[in-house]
Length: 339
Image 1 (cartoon, rainbow, N blue to C red):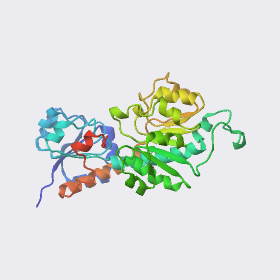
Image 2 (cartoon, rainbow, N blue to C red):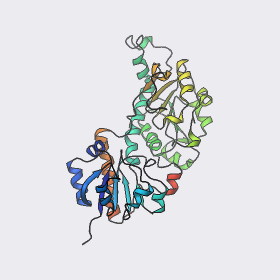
Image 3 (cartoon, helix red, strand yellow):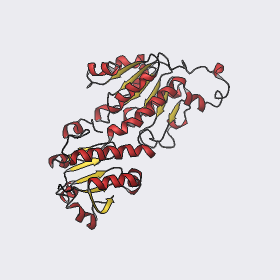
Image 4 (spheres, helix red, strand yellow):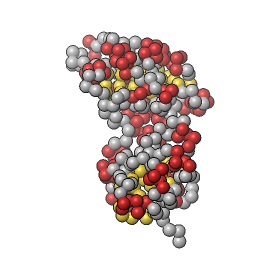
C-alpha cells in the first residue's frame, strides 16, 4: 500500500481560514499526511524546522514566506510546491528550480474572477455608469441631459485587449456576450491564428489605440512593460475612450492618465495602481472620470475556494504521478508568464 506524502500548509492564518473549511480540510487529510502543525506562516521556528525535514509537498498561499536557500535546505525531502493563489514570483526563486521541485499555481483559477470583473467594467464603461454616478450634477437629471460622455452604448463597440494572457484570453471569450463587438489584441508573443480562433484580431499596439472604445490591460509586470501605456499611447486613444487596468499599476503612467482624465478626454477604471494604495494627494483620487477599486478583481470570499480546489486537484494528480495541468517551469517563470 502506497503511503501518503507528508504535507505542510504554508500561509497566514487569514488565508488558511479562507482556503480550508471543514470539507476541504477533510479532503486534504485524505490526500496527504498532516502532522502538527497542520499550517504555518513561519518556516524558521524550531518546531516547524523539525517538521520540514520530512515534508514532501507544501500548499502555499498569501502570507507564505519566500522559499530561500536556507529554508529549502531545511526541507531536503520537498518535491512539490502547490500554490493556492496566483503569482509565485515572491515565493520561489532559482534554488527551487535547481532542486527540481515541481511548482504549480492557481493563476488559471484566479483568472476567472478577474476576467468577470473586467467584463463588468467594460459594460459599465460602455454606458459610462461609474462616471455618471460620480457626477453630482448629472446623475439624477435623466439621460436626455447627458453630454460630453461619448456614445453610451455596448453595441458594435471596439475593445482592445493588451496581453493575450490567461486573463486576456478569458476576457476575449466573455466579450462574445456583447452584440457585434470588435475585439483587438496586442501582444508581441501571441500567435495570430490562436488569437483568431478565440474570436479576436492580433494587431500592433500603435494600430490598436486609435480604434478602441475601451482599452483593457492584461500584460505581465516586466521591465519592458513598465509604463507601457504612457503619455504618447494615451494621446492616441479616441476622445471618451475608457482605460481599464486589472493587471499591474506599473503598466500605466499614472500622471499622464490623470492629465488626460482631468482634461475631460478619457475615462479610467482602475483596480490596481502605482503605488498601491495611491497617496492621498494623487490627482487620480479626485477625478469623477476615474473609478478606483481596492484590488478586488482577484479571488475573494467564496471565490478563494476555487483556488483551494484547484491546488488539491493538482495534488491528487501529483500523488498519482499524472501530468500537472498548471505547472510552472523555470522558463515560463523567467518570461513572466507565471506572474
